Structure formats: C-alpha cells, structure tokens
Image (cartoon, rainbow, N blue to C red; front, side):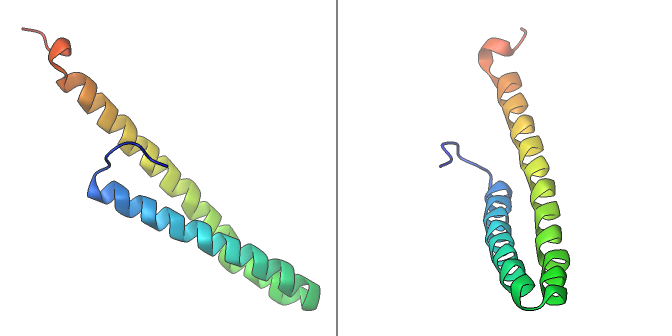
Length: 85
C-alpha cells in the first residue's frame, strides 16, 4: 500500500502497472494451459503477451522510480532548512 500522495500522472502509471501485472498473470496462465494442449499456441502466448508485458513492467518501474527520485529531490531542495539565505 502506498503512503505518499502521488501526482495524477504517477497515479495513472501505477494503474497501468497494475493492469500490466494482471495481463502478465493471464498471459502466463494461458501459456501454461496452451502449452499442454498445443505447444505452438503456448509459445505464441508467451511471445505475444508475457514477454511484452514484462518488458513494459520493467520500463514503468524505472519511470516510477525516476519520478519519485525527482519528487524527493524537489522536496529536499525546497525545504526551508535547506535554503541558503
């Protein structure tokens, strides 16, 4: 559970990330089921759903971490005790 107040665009990225996790779960389940029935279809599910979803999750994780680092840096620099008079 997140305890910080995120910007709307960060909330959108989090929602998209949740959707991708769901897609990844469905893709893995489909690949397992299809591989037992038809190996070619299971392989297609793996290449067309699982691998792109996992690559996008890695990308969005990096994006979220970069945004959080920028936000923390902005908060640190804007804090009154950090300002030089």
